[in-house]
Image (tube, rainbow, N blue to C red):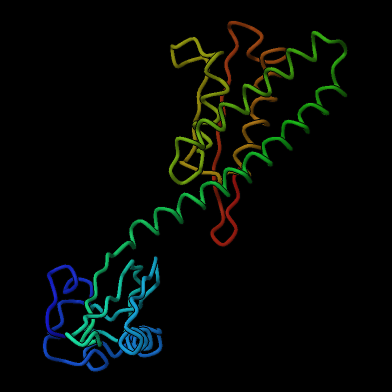
Length: 242
């Protein structure tokens, strides 16, 4: 090494490498092709361009290495006779860009999976509604209500960074249209229980069916009626919600 800049120093962990051979300065690179590439460039006089290549560096004074991704060029330095006398290395640490793209790809795969599951759920709702409806008006009302409920649940899940929905939030969304705003007609009481995507969709639909039944035939069909929903959790290894 004859010269390094501040960015390279940060990348390798601020080690003092000036005046050292690269094999001694960065021994962790031994099995990562970089020494062979340098030898190849020096012998051939042809530059090498690397794109998003992983490199494991011992940036901290421990035995652990950290994976980074780099774009770089090994450019041979030629003497007056046209033969390599050294190599100029120019590169960029693109680790953050790679991680961002990986996250985007993960989100795309998750979205694809979610859409397939949602379509399957809608098909199930369609079939169940068609079997139970007495006429087209009943079918339209029930099917639309269930789709709206499904949409509310997905809104909660979309706004949650952890892709979860709380039981309290699902109940609030379903029962809010029947609440008179006084806090007396509908009461919700229970601990904060958060459900993953697969459970939240099913539980949200179940709450919708119960709320619809209560509005048609139960307490919510009477303006003087009240509804209380209470839940509790027990167990540790296998938690159960009652």
